[in-house]
Length: 188
Image 1 (cartoon, rainbow, N blue to C red):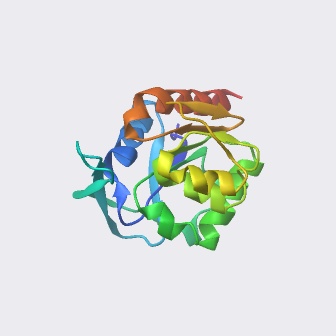
Image 2 (spheres, one colour):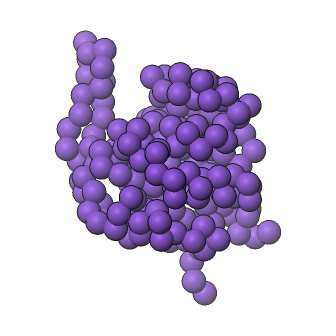
Image 3 (cartoon, rainbow, N blue to C red):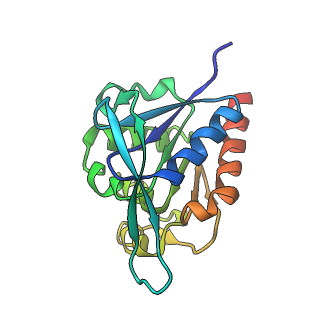
């Protein structure tokens, strides 16, 4: 029996922990994570942290990750859910029309979606956050609210089929409930 596939959306400067924590939790949960990006190629991930005494995020090079599929080649009906990773990547890939259409498809089908940190910029740009309660990193609050979403400063926010967390520090709070949502849909 094949494992259900779940999309993990990345791009250059995707945050390493934002990406790898759910990637490996999906495998542990019996799912096949499929890394998706603008092109099928290797992407450089980064590490983000606000250092003591700093008011902005410091960035270091992290691991790299191979995208298995380009957005334009995705057939969303082949996937059980979607995850929007953080880092700087969402700021750039949120203009990809194929990604926006995929995002809208998952929302309309009420399939499990999850977002962390800057990942919120993709569903916001796709126009699906109006009235939706979401967690995100505080500096993306504006992106969420200007698109009609409701900012919630909590480690896990679940609203309809969207699960969200603020940063990778919240991964232990929101990734598990998202996988539980995937499990419920799998059994339905």
